[in-house]
Length: 161
Image (cartoon, rainbow, N blue to C red; front, top):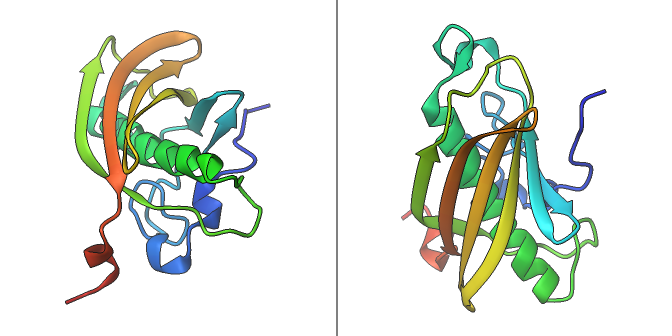
């Protein structure tokens, strides 16, 4: 039986902000990454599809970068939501974040036929800026590491001017 994230922060994003290609639940063509808590760490589980290959049998690096990116912004939303006294599913709209920087290190080729598990460790660096170190595993093998610095979404992102 495949592991799942049962309570994901993306489930609580308002419809206007649920369109991200990586983690937007309303983007019918997107990946639908889902990020939740596991103890004090965050977790996203995703099984690449056959079209996500770089070469037969191995995942395209851009998908790994996208996974780390969305895992980082989702983790930031989880962390600030919890710091504000809330949890996923409590009916309070969580904060939204955007990526200020993304660093990815590919440790070894990532197989295409297994679930990928992104595990994040949180470091607050400013009330509106969070840093996440993420490791991506295929089975129990470390395949990639990443760092995301996420900032609270500017109000200008809420307007289509």
